[in-house]
Structure formats: structure tokens, C-alpha cells
Amino acid sequence: MWDVPQPQGIPDIDACPRLELQDNVSDFTDTLKSIYDSFHFDNLPPNADLTTLLTFLSGILRITTKYNMQQLRNKCIALLCQKFPSTLSGCDAVIAEQYQYTPSTIVRLIPLARENNIPEVLPWAYYICTQMSIPDLLANPVLSWQDKALCLAGKERLREARKTTTHPFLLDLTRSLQCSGGTCATGLRRPTANWRESEDQRSLPHPIVPYRDWTALGTCTRCTAVYEAQRRVEREKV
View 1: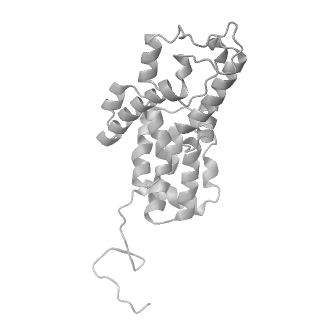
View 2: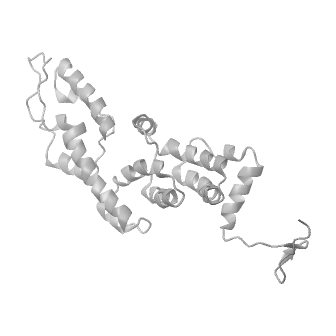
View 3: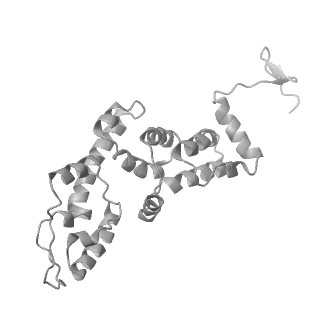
């Protein structure tokens, strides 16, 4: 090996040829820290906001993906998947903890996930992006036009899913076979489901958010139990 001729006329360090990499210096610095410091990931607080999380992981993800450093890459992906779950139970967990997603940070994740082949975090990222207003979505300088088109189409599909699949009882209460009758409000259109509520659902569709105001429906306990059971099943479909 020592007999292999070395390239001539290039800078060297201690007689060793210097190889210039095209990678970002800070990305490589973060990656080296994660390699040589066993407790590097302990510096990331468990309740870190999304900006902190992405800043901490982005450089490591880019380098570990490029150079096939699978163990570190998997560690980064696992941390991202905690905040961008691909299962309903995972979504319920982040909703329950009221984790804050800011639009300016969400849109950073989408190109990062695309560039580094992390498709499992994209569904929740797109879902959250559909909560942005249409003017903000169209004016966003980070998202590509393809991503904007996906978000706009997703917004309409989520609105339709909320209306017909996960929350149809908010507009039209159908009497269940187990209905106890009496003062049960089934068969009646909710007076609160007015045009303003419909427009709010159109602009900010959120069909998988847990529905908790069952008493406001005015239905009997048997009909309410049927609606709750149906909703659990329908949320899985979304």
C-alpha cells in the first residue's frame, strides 16, 4: 500500500493528500460529534420544539444518508417519527401532548425527508400542512408547487372525510337500532352545524382529532355509544 503513488500538485497535510468534500461543514461537525460523543443525543431535550429538533438532526441525517451510516441514520429517523407518526395511535399521542407544529418549521421537514428518503414522516407532515390557510400555503417559499398541490388536494379530501366519514353525526344524526327513544335528538340536524362551522371545517379540516363533546349531541346513551364506536373505526380509515 505504501508503494501506491500519491497524486502530485495538490495540497497536503503532513504529507497526506487533502481531500475536499462538498458537504456542509456544520453538517459534518454535527455528525462527528454524534460519532465521537456517546452522549451527543442526550443534548437534545425530550420536549424539544420542532425547530430545535430539525436543527439538531438535519445535518446528521444528510451525512449519514450520503455515506450510508445506517445506525446513526436510524437513530435520527426514530426521533423524527416520534413527532411525525405514521400510525393512528402515534398521532393520538402527539395530539394528546399538544405538541406545537409551526408552519415555518413543518415546511423545512418535507424537503429534508424527500432528499434523505424518509417517506414515513411525510403523511403527518402533509396532514399538518393542510391546517395552513390557503394564502399562506400558496405564498410559502419553501414548498415546491407539487407539494402545495398535494396540500390543497389533501385539504379538500380531509374536509370531505370529516363530513362523510369521521364526523357525519355533526350534520345529520341517524337513529341507531339500539336507540332508547324519548328525548334522543337523533334524526334532527344539529342547529350548531351552521354555515360558519362548515366553512371553518373547510379551511382547517382535522378529521382525526378526537371528538369529546358527545353530550352536546343531545342523543341517548345508546346512540352515543354507537357513534363513538363508529368514529373509532372511521378514524383508522383516514
